[in-house]
Amino acid sequence: MKKFKSIVFLFFAIFFISCSDSSSTKSDIKKMHWDRDMCDRCKMVISEKKFAVQVINPVTNQTFLFDDLGCAISWFEEENQTWFKEAKIWINDAHDGSFIDAKKAIYTKENITPMGYGFSAYTQNTKPKNEKYFSFTESVNLIKMRNDQYHQEK
Image (tube, rainbow, N blue to C red; front, side, top):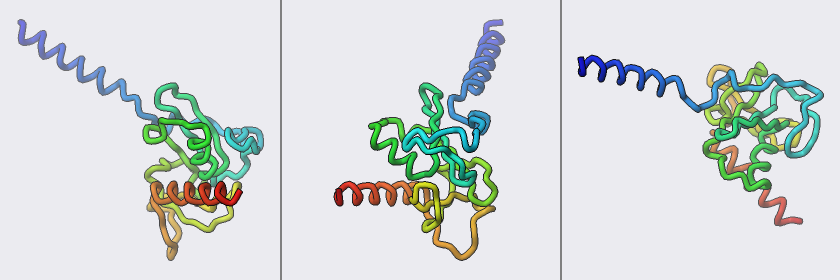
């Protein structure tokens, strides 16, 4: 009987642990109110449906909205947010406008984007042909370099 109770306890423990996954999923994405929601950094109205970014704080589940990947990355630096690595970041696929995981996306540069950072996100299935591609990390580093250069010129 004791062995049976141990097995039942183990089963429920595994069940509850698997159900309490704290990582964000697509269901965490807020409905966007195009031309009404404002960027949490620059306060511009978000209207470009292929460049919007949502950042979810993993501790508070609070969602922050941005009109461009550059605004999101800059906001983390300017506001001294320490949870960047843990953040769940969703970005619109520039091909079809659906939200995709920004950290897994493929980026192209030199695009016309709301804040001029130039990064468009894609999945493996939607990426344009014959382009130079950047990872999320490479894109973030290029944005940070641009911001540093801008601040040095001021």
